[in-house]
Each structure stands twice: as C-alpha cells, then as structure tokens.
Image (cartoon, rainbow, N blue to C red; front, side):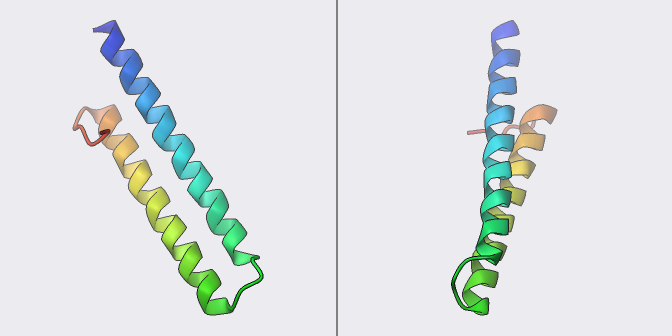
Length: 68
C-alpha cells in the first residue's frame, strides 16, 4: 500500500511539473520573435497541454487512473 501511494505521489508531481513547464513555454511563446499568429498558436498549444496534464494529475490523485 505504501509503495503505491509513493508511486502515485511521484506520478502526480511529475505531471504537475510538466504542466508547469508547458505554462512557462506558453508564456515564452508570447514573446518569441515570430508573427502574432504563430505566437498565439504556440501559446494555445502549450496551455492546452498543461491543462491536459493537470487533469491527469487530478485523476491520479482521486484514484481514477489516467497517470500512464
């Protein structure tokens, strides 16, 4: 039981860390030396990925799976 709790915690932290990285990349995309449409597309892509990762992290915590 303890090992599975630790593994779940590790997976959750990993997903949250990846989500934070995508949020940082999204902010960075806004200031890139590209056209406005490219910057917006990259920003939206990274924000969407961050939201997906955060949802997976919440599912992992609540025991619904989705951490694979």
